[in-house]
Image (cartoon, rainbow, N blue to C red; front, side, top):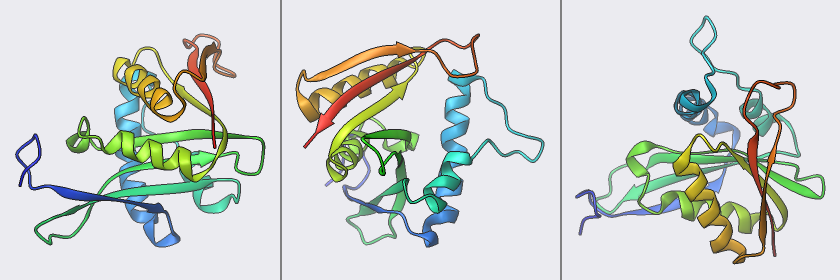
Length: 178
């Protein structure tokens, strides 16, 4: 059996990150920041790295959690890491989806929606998710995720990016999961 891309079907597994996952997350982080640089204009530092405070917090701050997604091929091949989510605010009234990424080869296959739904359900409560209007796929994706999670019981607003008055505002979706 194959998927719509002609690849063998695979099972998605989603789990919290552990310290042993750090090297994998660091590699995925570079891909994520590279993809986002198209929208944000961010450039790597002289060593070729992008800012990584959020990634580091997911491994050091108890108010943060990382979640990692793998596809496990049906043919018994080793699982492939295909995405991650970083959540902050677990010690307060509002959880924030700080970073979310799915590798390009797994996009538009349902992996992202399943990962997002898993994360929202894993940490019930009030959520805020930011994205940029300059990223039309993200706009469509997050509106669909919010609707999947809570129907029409979500709101959307534009907020200025703190400390960056010349940058277009981020779009924020707010919703509450049970």
